[in-house]
Image 1 (cartoon, rainbow, N blue to C red):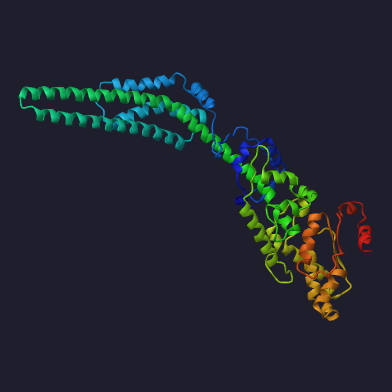
Image 2 (image 1 turned 60 degrees about the vertical axis):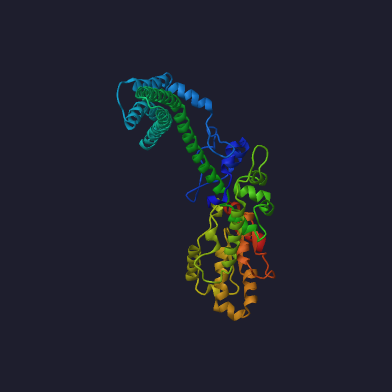
Length: 455
């Protein structure tokens, strides 16, 4: 079933335990198959904000920083000072490389060891560290050049105002000092800025890695939630086949299906379904996308109507669109049903030409077997000779020649809806009853059960 049916999954992380208890009751679907969940849903490690984004408690980040780095933070700050006090002429690029190498050797390596980071992840952090240094150094250099431009402009104005050479030389001397001071001021400012940035890096990257960790937990949790919701969603076609009509929607879905049947098939009550759909205390609900849900219902009903005439030779049938549920609701494929009926005719030549021969399905699952029998009888030359009128022939077959037991209410409705489809309401359904034949079979009393209903 498509994940497009579901909405507001992240809202579950802010919900009460009630939601998880309900989800834990639902069957699980993975890779198109029902599976038994190995563990109960537990999202205690996942926290999200009002927008559904993963968040990490600041206290966790601070504690991790102290545990991983502690005094190393100040050591990193000192390493910046050491690089600035070295009497070396460095280009901006060389300074960035030296700073990045020094800081990354501590921060990246410690994070890698603690969080088992992959090479791609460590490279991303290194790039962020380098980018931080590049940006701050570039900004500082721009500010320095702007200040220098103002000083040069002031010099030009002062030089224009005097003609005496000594005065001009004095102005130039002052200018050189101011340029030197300007360079020193911006160098000191850059050092302080970079030290602050370096001191923030451990916390910044711990928070970043922690959020990514929680985001991965969240994604995994959402996948688990969808597995459970798909387990529920795969029951929907069965309900539509058994009880649905064109007025069925998400909003009235709970009024179409009897409570005991709903619980038997899904594992949750109708009230619990309403809670997932509508919400309640501590939970906003809306786990199902209304538009997608409603369109899926109508699409199934269109397909059901398209395939309703089982007298036509069609490659598919409506049960190709109904996922199997529990063991007693796994539908026998159409090709297998045809082989069964072919085998019956091979062992009993002319069996479908006899208007008095009777057939029974002791454990109906879909009605496909009965429908195939009806089709063979209806098209047989023997019955055409006795009942040339097609409507009379069909009525005779369904009221006198075919019988069936259905083990549950939903299977009874699915089977009879398929068998009778768009046929006339004048045809009786008395030959099809709701009764699980397994107990009678175990006790060797099948014939007694058949006689009870049809004897």
